[in-house]
Length: 223
Image (cartoon, rainbow, N blue to C red):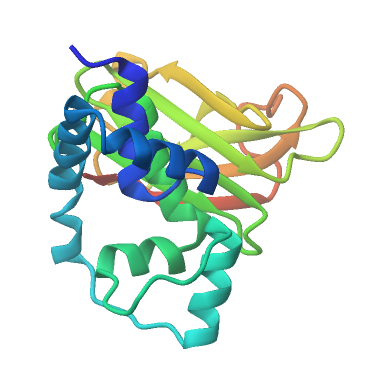
């Protein structure tokens, strides 16, 4: 079995989320390691269907050039970039964060059954949270990036299903990753629900209901 770190790195390589220096070193390994090349091919096959779901968008040349420089610190790619890569570049950190969470969930390339993702980003783009829920394990994993809450405050994550009152899923880390089991009674509410982040007192809302402003929200969708 391949090293789990190599499997995760192959996914990052396919998504284009590696820093430039790591990407160059990984590309060198690909030329010498057949097993690693097979892992990359498997991830490419997994993500290829995304191309069929996204309409191509061609950014103005200068916007595309600036994005390439900011994201990858390298020269712009030639014309003819696939719709998926245009979406990753133009969708902001939101898309990258969600897909990074997919990689982080498991060293094995995930299937399309039983996984739900929500990619939340604040209006000004300063706060980002990607959540991935696995029906099989009943676990939700989150990846938090961007600006931390003010001193004495925390981000709290809420599950919103239809007309039901929002249900707290807990206080989020200010940065990095976390995992949380979803109670049995809440798992049936995941389908077509929305996740939202609010700005709450340290430790979370003392009333059990959201008291602070909504920082970001996004629906959970099956992948």
